[in-house]
Image 1 (cartoon, one colour):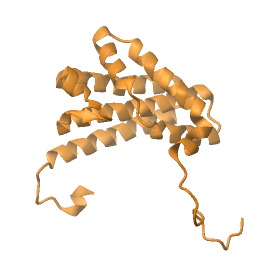
Image 2 (image 1 turned 120 degrees about the horizontal axis):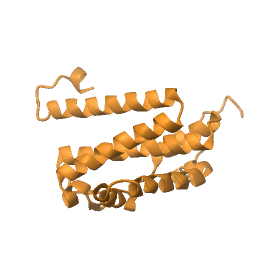
Image 3 (image 1 turned 60 degrees about the vertical axis):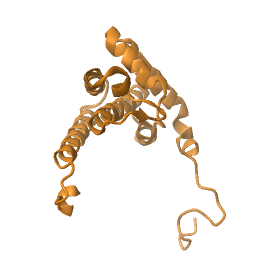
Image 4 (image 1 turned 90 degrees about the vertical axis):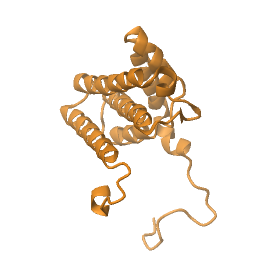
Length: 179
């Protein structure tokens, strides 16, 4: 590479698609989806029904895709990569379920939210189930360091959501507090 050239896309080049970025881990992402569907099947009938509904229309899997790309680069074993990626997606999914409850959202990804279909109490429990299942999976199949990162990130996410809720409609909110 000529280091005098400006980095970035060339003129007239098309942006890289998400599918192209995640192509190297496409097979692993499919395994993540299978892993998560197994979680949906290995639980109580009430949670199973809701979990199936959640995973019926999966998201773009950006977070697990990025994790898989990085983990592959650093030499993590397949089981650790898949489990960690599934845990990341489950944590993200749980946060979306809880966020839908807090925000009173009726749709997500073009479908009715779990809270709209099953009610807030049941959807809160299925969100909690995904949080706990992801932590359980990470403790049993992933290095302690990754488990610590997952739990700390989840803590910060929940704290942030609580602060957002605590300051809802606070029009005197200082910029520093917002950030």
